[in-house]
Image (cartoon, rainbow, N blue to C red; front, side, top):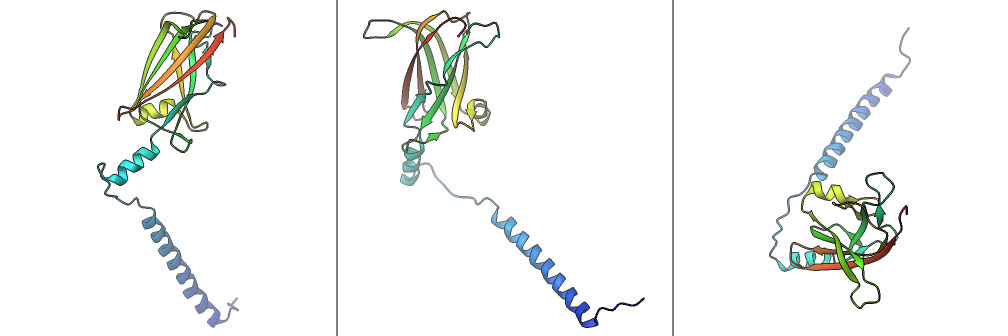
Length: 187
């Protein structure tokens, strides 16, 4: 048996294959070099950086009322804590990640009073200052924070409550929100 392919066609295929192979390798090398992170010399004391930080830092925090609720963390049927869903918003109103210390306080509600905060039931400080802590509390799907705040001394009694949340940023600014809710046993 002999090769019926014309000799000129065989020689044309080899250079074309080599050319395609060289082009593919070159393209891969260019893509790899373009994907390398570039080092930027950014200083924290310039006016551009200050403007950027001011623009991107949270301007408000919001306890998500429809998702925040008393929770049964122990599994015995009665609430022994509060699950808090909280969103930090930037100057555009978009949800953003943030660092700082959150102070959550749970109070009984004082009825028929100008000051609704009654007796303090619980206080939970939560600091977010590392990748590990961010991953622990940040929910990528909802772009919000989820805090599972368990009472240290027992169950949540039926009644009306006020939950306060405060974020203290590294710059010292304080953001604040409150949420009022009622709890009935077995809820």
